[in-house]
Length: 119
Image (cartoon, rainbow, N blue to C red; front, side, top):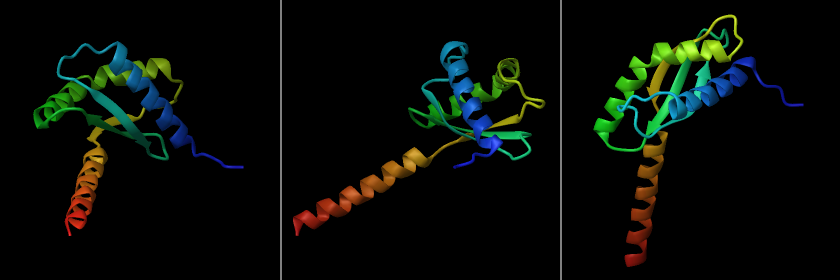
């Protein structure tokens, strides 16, 4: 039987709740096409790193980060209302560049493949 750590379950629930808050409740125009990719919660459930990605350019990333940071208090308050935890973790938003990195690797592989077909 596979066992999960409580922090992983809490992280999954936080990801779902923040996604719903962003989708349905926040009206900040700075927060564009933001996707919550992962939430890493510490074992003591005191801190949560919320990884997000943004569809758009560098300016969209910066504006989304500013919007998320300004909404952090509201998001934490809503999480506290929706989840039954003794302590609500401190939220830290972190940009997830794994999608961009994956695209970069894919472009490199395509370039290698294309140059191999020319020979």
